[in-house]
Image 1 (spheres, one colour):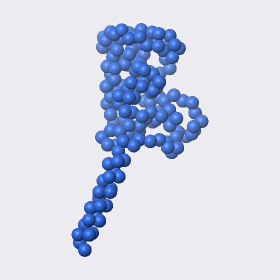
Image 2 (image 1 turned 60 degrees about the horizontal axis):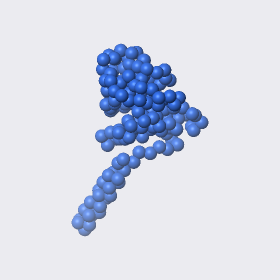
Image 3 (image 1 turned 120 degrees about the horizontal axis):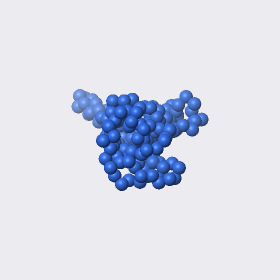
Image 4 (image 1 turned 60 degrees about the vertical axis):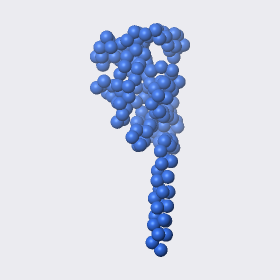
Length: 166
């Protein structure tokens, strides 16, 4: 009789292990994740992020953008040395459709939730409604899943689901 119990116990452990193993990397959103106003909003997804020791609001996450943007005015307000900007020959098309050359690029470390991300931003001298813009390149490179509908980003870090609210 003992071996049969042991086999049943092993099978239960195996089944539990399988469920935990196959549950990894299954990030999803539900109606329980919606903000208080439900689906009746038209907000952009803006986070508050720690960048180079400063907490920065209006950190826009936009999967439709092909580049990560940092306005020059944001760097100046954060008192980040302009000498850190490396010249480049990148040209971007802004929301208004006009092509603009960048001043250069800057490498910054962002802390989003418990995770530090290394991001290279294109620096532009433009007026914007955001302080930084994280585009599709960053989203795909990091595996972060943004939802403007749910006003949050989710990602996996050290086998745990991390949620950062907008």
